Image (cartoon, rainbow, N blue to C red; front, side, top):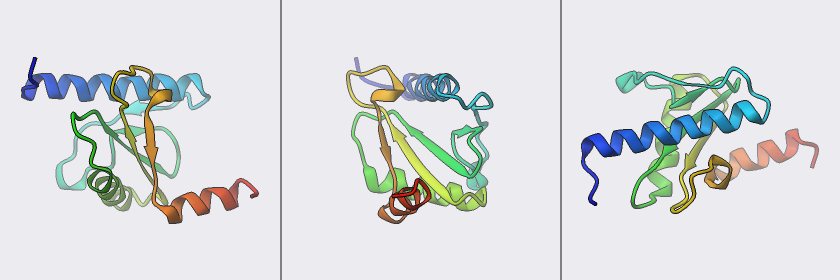
Amino acid sequence: MSRNRASAKAAGRNWESAIVTALIAAGWPHAERRRLAGSKDRGDVAGVPGVVIEAKNTKAINLAAALDEATREASNDNAPIAAAWIKRRGKANAADGYAVLSGATFMQLLKEAGY
């Protein structure tokens, strides 16, 4: 079955909800889906302070575009951390998805974790 606009929106909404469910279970009780905000969008998932999460559930994975979008939205939110959380094909659990960060952000997180 090919994807149309309605099925693509549903897939995105379901992936965002899966991410929120995973975050809440992992200890971020305020995680929630955000409303669309056009050019001032601030990511798809809120509730992790200082972090903008851009959720992607697409047929083809485009890491650069996903991270660029997350970075723009982090700037709109004045958040220091931008992440694209991408659905892994054949896996429904958000913990099985890919979290994409810039190298600079990854090094920042390593330093903050004490490595």
